[in-house]
Length: 376
Image (cartoon, rainbow, N blue to C red; front, top):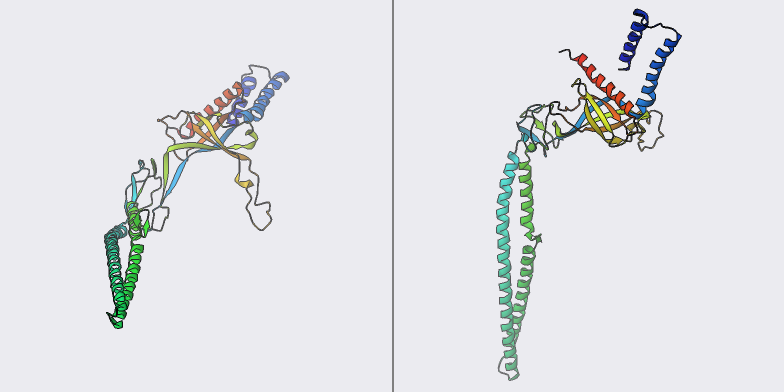
């Protein structure tokens, strides 16, 4: 733009003073011509560059999600075409889910068996309690008989052998009671193995079944938001590795413009400053915008931890900072497209109205110059 203005100014001066000689090109007018040009140059360098920074290195950005399946396998079906706009939740592609369908059936069968086993364990607990009760009753009977025979022995009404038999019966009943109690404890331990109110064996199968159902449900990979796939290379029959990205998905719900600005014009820029954006693909159109964030950091200044001393090629200064802007008045007739190049002019709060007007004229002129690349 500056070159075009310089050329235009040169021909204007030539027409006035040399070709048509409307004014004498004396020392006074030479000072005027040079003074106007130097004043314009100083205004651009000292004022416009400081208070209304300008960037020709800007482009539209959006969130890009790398779509990948939950597990590896073969692609069964692709639902979308390149650049086809889809809504959040719409299917993008589907993996072959036969393995997970089989696993769901397998775990459903195991779950039925596990619940039956838990019911059996419950019956074993009930049966064990009954046996313990029966053994306790039998032990009480045997002890009572032993007591009766012991009293009869004092009167020599029973033989010693009979007493010994009853004592052995009591010992056998006590041993049987101990066995029945141990069996009951084992049955209760197996039956009372609970996790969050669910038997451990059932909970384990239910967890496996839930995982299989989850993977079966996620054999269909769906759009994470409204958007489109700009580069479609996926085709049914392709084999995909575990969590391997296979398509980029561009989010169309949120766009912003990122521009690189010379650091020498950044000292007055703040979040909330007004701006103007001109896209090369939309000649003659300038969109109002606002600064939403400033990247006060550069990659060249980042140090990397290592065991060696840094050299001059590792860290290097950068002359630019990045600014993110949002269009405040989007026009549906001129939609933003990911990667569209643009020009940006930022109007800081310290900028005088005259500087804002000059920069507005400049960016509008730059926008109209984009017609030169579109003769039709």
